[in-house]
Length: 146
Image (tube, rainbow, N blue to C red; front, side, top):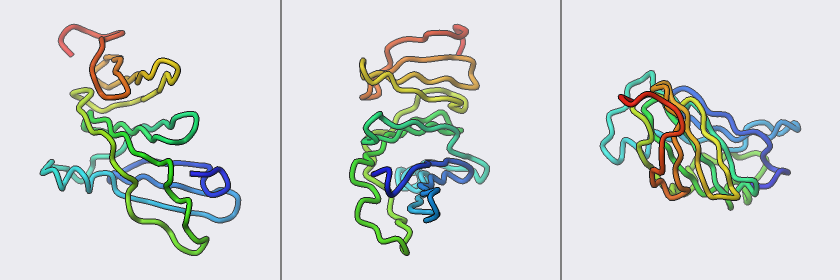
């Protein structure tokens, strides 16, 4: 992704992830994150949503958290680079990783790139620490039952 093509990523209901150019060009790309879940035989209810997202400093990876408690990591290093202004890209970028981070919705996701760490916060009242490869490291905050 280049900042000339995309300068806003929005996530929301139905599993949609949208890439926008707010400098007058509008929607650049969109894909339904849950399409990958359905291919893996996940049952997705209509009201489920993507609840949070973050990118690496270099915009190479997109991390998304959802209402099911999962984290997805997408390779966006070449996403939207070769699109025309008239066409909206509808294919998803390559999915690098999918893992269950929490039992309830992920409310926030952050990246500590200097340490290659992911920090997630959830409605289960836990803050957890993960490697960039999805390996659980520890609970930073939260009850022992979550």
